Structures are given as structure tokens and as C-alpha cells.
Image (cartoon, rainbow, N blue to C red; front, side, top):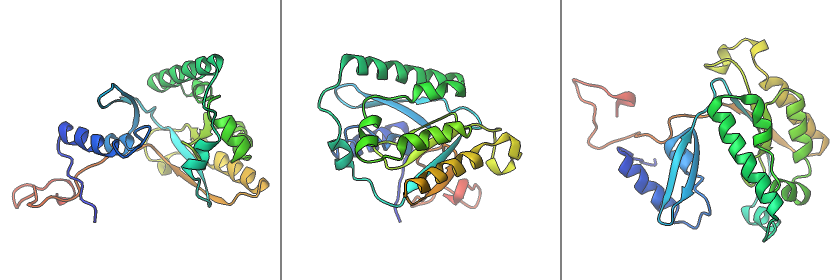
Length: 225
């Protein structure tokens, strides 16, 4: 069983340094370590990350195809250069996305996830169902939809009341209708897969086992660590 002992900020930064030396162009593992929504830059020496607020009640509806998308293939369809207009377009959308999340303005997420640098190319070459599925999700009530990373998963964000989704009233949720619309689009394009509905984890990595344990006969820590 994997053993992660992440006791302090120093140790999490050290672990992040290790995994980002494995030829990753960006640190996708940052979210796993710190939890929540993370934004990162490389300062020339190491990755520096900060948490972006996650709006209360936001749900993640994912269509996960049965096939595995190869990162090499997804990168291979991208152009070596981008135009100034496309760069300006994406920079503006990223700023808008961060602002929408920070302010909890879910209505603006649909503008923040717009893209010209990778989604059009990957949709044309690899995922012809992408844009129809994104439109179907938004038409069904999703705040936004986009290609998750290099794919093949398609992600939609929906709103609802705060707390566990199973305690919310049906009229407060849109995940069912969004999930149904995404699956119908997949069937239209002959893409098999499944829908997963979840929420962003704010915790990140945590200690699961310590030897010797922290807990004793006088004090018990979470999970009896």
C-alpha cells in the first residue's frame, strides 16, 4: 500500500519537486498534493502554486470514454506556433476564468473555458464528439464544459446547493440533466463511456499511515494515524 507522509509545507514542496522532474511540462500532480483548484508557474527554479477558490455547491460531471487517450497523440496534433490573436484570446480567457472562480460567478465560467490553442485541434483530429457534447451540456444547464486536459474526458461544471449532492433537492441540481445530455451525445457519435458526478476535493494528499503512529491510548487522530 502506498505510504505518503506529508507532514509539513516543506515536505509537500519537496514531493512536488520530485514529481515535476519526471519530464512533465506542467504539474498536474499539484492538485493531488494540495487539493482544490490550483494554478502554478515555474519561476526558473521550481514550481510555485496557489489555490483558487472553489465556488460552493459546484459539481463536476465527467464523461469518461472507454478508450484511453494517448498524450503523445494529443500533443502531436497541436501546432508548433500560435498567432498573436490566439495567444491574446487565451490569456484573456484564463484571467476571466480565475476571476469567475474567485468571485463565485458561475455564469461567467462559460467564457473563461473558451480556448483556441488546443481544443479545436484535438476536436478535429481526435474527438469529433467534443464540441457537440460541450454544447449539449451547456444547453442542459451546465455552467460550462471543456476538454479535461489532453482528453479524452469531457468535463462539465454545474451548480447546486452547498453540501453533499445527495442531500440536495432535485430542483437545486442540474447534474442529472447534464449527464443525460452528454451521454446522449456520446451515443450519437458511437462513443462508449460512463458518467461520473463528483465535487472538487479540497483536502489533497494526507497522511494515511505512520510508523510509529501518532495516536496513542490517550489521544486518537483522524483515521487512527
